[in-house]
Image (cartoon, rainbow, N blue to C red; front, side, top):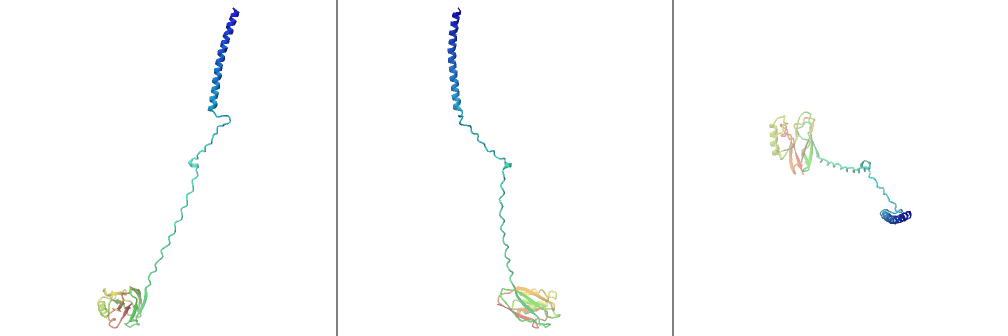
Amino acid sequence: MNTHFQEMSAQRLHQLAHVAGTAGARILAALALLALLAACAMPGAAQQTVVKAVARAKPISDTATPAPTAMPAPTAIPAPTATPAPTAQPVSIGTNGGEWQFDSVALEVAAGKDVALTFNNGAKTTAHNWLLVRGGDDVATEVNAAGMASSEAAGYIPNDTRIIARSAGLVEGGQSETVTFTAPAAGTYVYLCTFPGHFELGMKGVLTVK
């Protein structure tokens, strides 16, 4: 019996060993397959995983702000050149002392020219005025009559459209006044004093415009 049991045991062990050998071979084959798959999926020992450093973007507060571009200085605009004022032609006229006459009975100016006529009353006490009229002796006579009819406060100067230029009023003895006007068209014009009685005594002259 013992011999039979031993034989039975030996046979069972042999079967188990065969089964175990077959299972072990299967296990070893599976492990080898897993190792092969792992080798294909993972890089070799010589291929090291390279980790690239990604530069971290600086926050806005750390980013240098570019300096503002300097604006060009504005171009200076040259000041406009002042146009010189036209120069008036100076003319001077006076009286023969205390006589009721002008010291010049003939004057000459250019047509269209600005004139600055200075009337100097050389008398000590007698007042005079100066008027330039558009016309000859006939017009001067009419203007003189109108002047005598006006008042002393008006300087014996009437309101007449034929008067081209005149003093502001009476110019007292020893005083002067400058009368400015634009010379009329070419021709001859009479100037006079309309103080009562002076024109009749010859206080007049002729302005020639060329």
